[in-house]
Image 1: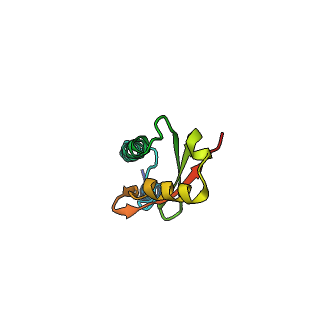
Image 2: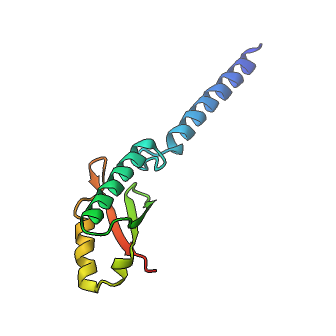
Length: 124
């Protein structure tokens, strides 16, 4: 292998190395967490269990709960908790607001940051 070929191959290998490591480093930003990870599922499961216990203690046993999330560009989580129960349909706005306050008194905290939580009541 002559000197020019050696330099060309070496430069090609170095460029490949730097491009590959650069793509890997930029491919998954540290700011945006992996929302499918077991860590987050566990936190969300515990939160739903706490909400279910609060609702049961308040007379809303067998309430349907659904938790959805979105992650913004900064890695902040925005959750929507959907709740349905026949008794909630009959509540006025003041009673629903009181129920919402009870449900949201404990936020989901991820990596030391509070998340945003919206509560939506689904009517039958």
